[in-house]
Amino acid sequence: MNNVQSFYYLLGLLASACVLTRVADFVACPRALVLLVGGCCAALVGGPSLEIDPGLVLAAVLPPLLMSSAFYTAWDDFRYEVGPIVSLALGAVVFTTVVVAAVVHLVNPSLPWSACFALGAIVSPPDAVAAKAILQRNRLPGRLVTTLEGESLVNDASGLLLYQIAVLSASDVNITVASGGTLLVSLSAIGIAVGALNGALMAWLIAKVDDVAIGITVTFIMAWASYAVAEKMGGSGVLSVVTCGLILGICQHRIFAAAMRLKAKATWEAAEFILNSLVFILIGLALRGIMVRMRQQDTLLVDGLKMAIPAIVATFAARLIWVGFTMYLPGQLLKGAHAIRAWSLREAAVLSWAGIRGVVTLVAALALPNGFPARDLIVFSAFALIISTLVIQGGTLSVLIRLIRIRVVRRPTMSELEARSKTFNAALQELSTRKASSKNIDDVAIERLLDEYKVRVGNNERAYREGAEQVDVRARQLRLELEMVSVSRRELLQLKDAGHIDDAVLHRIEAELDFEELRLLRLLEP
Image (cartoon, one colour):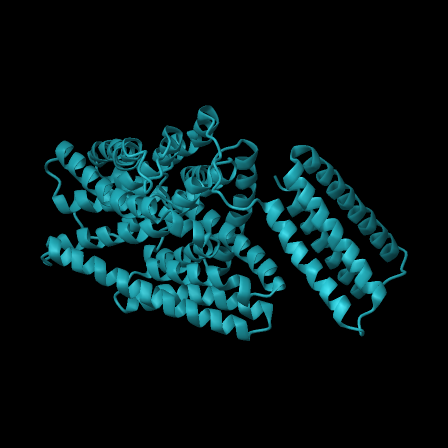
């Protein structure tokens, strides 16, 4: 397959990803699972056997995905739930690594401990990308979503660190608890420092750039640069990208123009969709190479199952045990303590069942050196675990959420309606002040603005004070406004069809209508 054929084949895969994604949404199935199955089917029925370069995936695909997740993370909520996040992202990862290694070695005593620990480290970090779509389709308590998303940002770093230690232990390098701890501190400190510097530099650059396209391009460049620089300096590239993304996310409200925010969000969503879709399909296509190697040795498939099944069981059990004994039980026992915010049984159930594995797990397995003990068995086991978690946990997580009827408990903060009322009221007060103090303002224009903001403030105040009935009244008004936008759009197109306006006027007015429609749709969201 030459370069041109490879390009068209890649386009075909992307088109297939779009179709498979729509199918997944239609049948309410995890997108990652459908994409992975699609890739597997293509490989089994005659698709090309692809050798994925794991280094390229880690360096090219992982940074943008991490940057996107970190950028849109609510920092205040993240900081509020930092205890549970660290518990899962560090404690659960270490515990899972040890449990998987011990169980696999118990069933396969001939396997070296380095191989068992490598497999444990590879399967220990859950994948946020695989679970994100499922969580977004269900109404969940804010702290639950924050904890799961926060865990996914940090656990890759801890899992890959343990993986690195396991790989080193198979060589002549002597790894002790002390040296491992020192390596953890060093990787983390360098990664966070590099990410913080890059985040501050990017915030400064974007504030100086007026061109939206250049600004968005800088965000992509900095995602890759944060990862590469940290890795080159001996730090954690994952933590560097996450830190950079968090800093930029915190600063975005002051340094980004409105157009930059709107266009950057759309661009990043498209990039995230393309990268996720292609990676899961390519992983499925890589199945052929794995199966060919498994068939070349008669006992390899049996040995692979003997390694994969205990690893799958241990992985499921480890997360259940960790969440139950370190998060749920302490909260129940110390419920009266002010510092303890107990997790309910329903929340603990979702936390335990959201440990879906994905891209990082298989990429780490493929990145094992060729001479590493039991390499093919580890790759096969990692692949089997990904499919198992996507099918079992991914396929039933939404069902579990609906069955247990988890309640949404919000933090004691101001409601959106009240905040919106106060926001508009500030503008109303400023308009009144300017009208009284300045003689150079057009009275007609300011009166119209005053009337508009009085309506906005009144609508929102009645909505949060008078409850559901007034909310319905407000929603009907918004839907009426939305219908008027459609009427305006239809008239605009008729004017263009009749030749009364040119393309420049069409695009300008159409953009204004688009922004108004987006505003109204956002206000109508539940």
